[in-house]
Image (cartoon, rainbow, N blue to C red; front, side, top):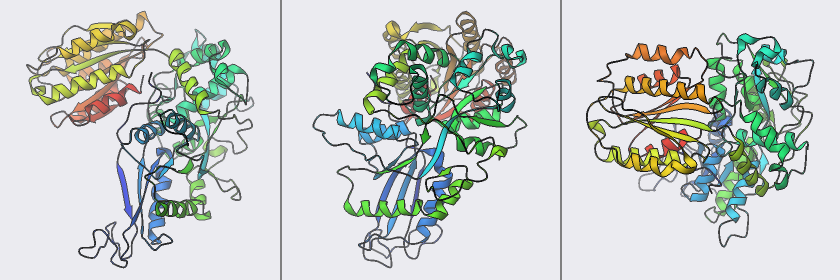
Length: 567
């Protein structure tokens, strides 16, 4: 059983160096010193750091300010910071697998610290937790971000809202019509995948507390109780899709408007941030669930791994002190975070003009131990909204050799990262689009799908538009028959359309954009290799209300795993 998500790409490396004589981000080193500072005979000490991407803007700024002070350890070594923005779950798995050995782990929530320690201690021979609970560097409550007119329809601001109000609109056959707005359609919720992201984990934890009617002391028995499973399955039924990044939902929510999502579980600072973007959509407001919510406490944890030296601990401690200094904390406030320094008064932009209430949250929930969190994830897997996905796979002649071998491995890893209640179909295309194979429920059909993938071979040209159109039409029919599932296409191609006879790009975009019957089929695309056209694939994904990614033979397996996080 998969306790934690598969490794994900480490993302862009931010490598900033502090030394005497640095200019333009370059390290000035004396010839032959092997990276040593020109003003010091001591080699630099590097603090590697995995951190939640929600604080990237603030942390990037603070790293640069810290390095500008030419910081040194107590022994006189220059300090370097190697900080990588990663999802909390992907950072956890990278640490556990040994693919990344950071000195500092700073997820969005301390809940992931508990998960990391629980998974670490389950390995034979380990008796000591890897991570201390750490010190918060910034704070932001978890909120339900929704459009102001929709919040008002539910009774905001005069009424304190919560998960019970979400259930009323999400479970009503009339959708928003039950609240006087049939033109808004059904209620559509978004939150991240709890095995990849802190906000997703805290979302389902809040659902569990609401279902158990508790605010503290949630345990393994509670998370599997009838009250929790009932409420969780009802809330999750309105989820449009999942994902690995809280920032992704915030960006798409703002860009695409109320037609894409009615609400998303975000952090308060992302609601504040949305006011800097002029999109023509109504403003967002933050709902602090009356049943209770959590702080995203962004702990700064110096790991107790054998790879962490005493001097790295010293350097990491100096950077922590800098992050907790008043100027750094005041800058966090300006970016929409609550300062970890309680001596700093809360003021704009944490105000009603930016959709938030600095007097909230009134009820805080307790984060349980790691064993309970793992049991919670198991309960979520059993009660999440199941998916029905068609993998649209390019088998044109240009895929011959390693590209085809790696793409097959990627498609199989995608299937392996879904659950037994999900269904998958396969649509291969070359110069033409072939009928869909399946779909098969993964509980008993996974091996059939894997064998069919293994039997594919490369030949012919590329009928991309016809393949997407055929897969989309098939998924729409399935969505009409079974609207309880998330319905989507995941399209992978290494080339440009050469052979479509039924659809042009404009016709395909028009067909994807209509969705007149509200089936909600989403289209996700993967531009595989240099021969693909990322612009066209991005346009297809945008028209299909999904997202796009780029892959190569070196990372296509990981890209497919990341795509699985949407389901």
